[in-house]
Length: 222
Image 1 (cartoon, rainbow, N blue to C red):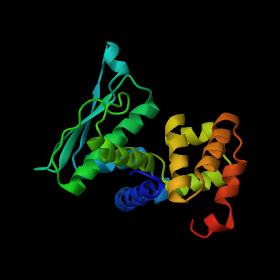
Image 2: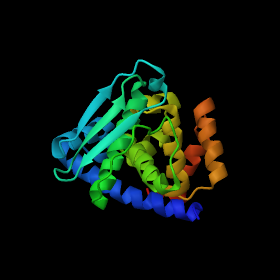
Image 3: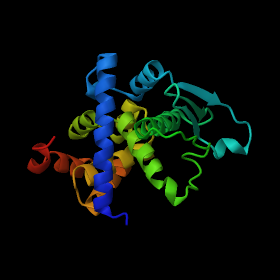
């Protein structure tokens, strides 16, 4: 049911939605899309939709189980987004972006739904939640790590650690973002993609990624 062609279509649909919000954020904060970071998207959600982001401070085993929550009110088209403040900043950034992805999807679908406080750290979703979580995860990656600037930085063969620091992203989020871009966005072979990303993360060897992104086929579309 969920083969590669399904995920390619799903990724492309999500990309189209995020491109739309990226253009709005770019205009609102007066920055080019390539210069946008998560803080700009967050600022946009706060100012335009009056979304509020709340810290939750856990002092027990719960801090290792829970990451984010959201309450959406469609009457006022706004949301209250909670996040576990004990997480490291890259995880906080992703959680805020992930929950904002749920908010964006609900605005588009015009459905009223409250997400439980189990995102990211505890993955116990039923199949009916899969698509919502896939959308929120992919959207979060796209808002954290803007595509055109990511491609530019990869082509410049910047170190993996530096790349993560530029976007305030965790190593895990960065690896997934690059894999999804190559496999679902550009149609690169899954196994070649995995090897290229592993070499980049583990050994700072970006030669394979450079070859992919500078190939004539990819250069013609990016």
